[in-house]
Image 1 (cartoon, rainbow, N blue to C red):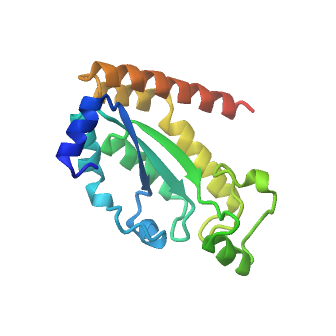
Image 2: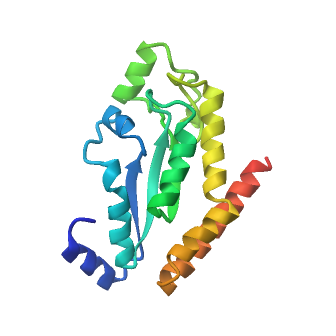
Image 3: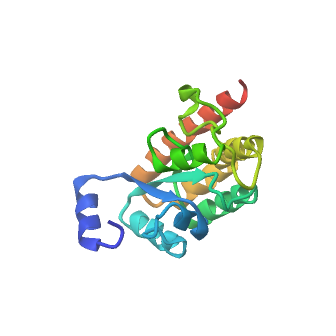
Length: 188
């Protein structure tokens, strides 16, 4: 969609205020591991900018925990998301859902940590990561969510969309809601 200016113009005219984009990772190696060859890290900034030029906010879907990742992926992800101007993010932990090839691979390798299906929600580590401990993956995921939705990064994002009053209002409301969700989650 970001490469079709006519479609983007029509989306803007229709009142589209936001899109969800499965960016998945800031690591090209992780994208290749997930067979996401259409995602090109080098093009992220341009894609986000194109949506913004049409007054459209971008919520990115991000996943951490790929086999080639270590704990350095968390600050790298935060920095890139900040630098490319993503407005909102849905952070998830790579999860081997039952019935998938990934689940079969993890099970055959003895890397499944739990069969408690309630934990298979993208928020909990359910398998043994390759280059970090399960605790490091969980802590990194939680840190990334809190860091992205902390006050200073939210204010920076709002400044970036200030020239679009509706984008500013929507972004302020949603970022503030996520901020308070993260704050209340961290108190549990």
